[in-house]
Length: 283
Image (cartoon, rainbow, N blue to C red):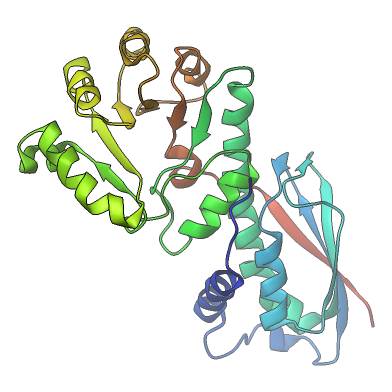
């Protein structure tokens, strides 16, 4: 299921990006006659899952409102190298001014969607699901989490405000796993917040299960320990593997029987998809 994004968030993302890029004016675009029209094509130079169409369209709305865009691909569609993604027709100055911001959103969000899809494909046929984390680019958390959903992954909490994740420092400060879970229950119950606790070994897992934990993150467990954890759990809680996960080992991790696998790399260590825009005069 795709993450529903408030259009206001897209507007704010684009406004921040265009203000950062344009400043007072695009003086380079003024080299072009003010009435010059052009047709531009956006081309993918490598295979990718395309994501970010709403952000591109908002860029045009804000900077080139009279431009017309025709998409040859759909959001979430996979394309091969050298595929034309869209054509844009309109005022040449405006299209030049919007080019960088539009491509930045499209290549960044497509990168997250593409990376996510690779992990999703790698664990096909297992019961595990790929999850994102809060390790996102500043200012683009909702956009990147949306891209994860476009790639077929699931979203964790959006921020500190809509879920509780208990980590080792919380446990140490509270005194014990039962104590910190009891405090979390007091906070979460009236607000209907999810509560997840991170454990670092099987002893902590047993403590969490005995204290009634229903969502447990297994931090940096190796394969044999993950298998033991799944057996020990006996389906009492949802188990999530995290830490040290990559495309080489993700399927083996999924086959241990964990329910979820969270991966920060799909949002924080991405490489932008290679896209380019090419112009043709329409005078």
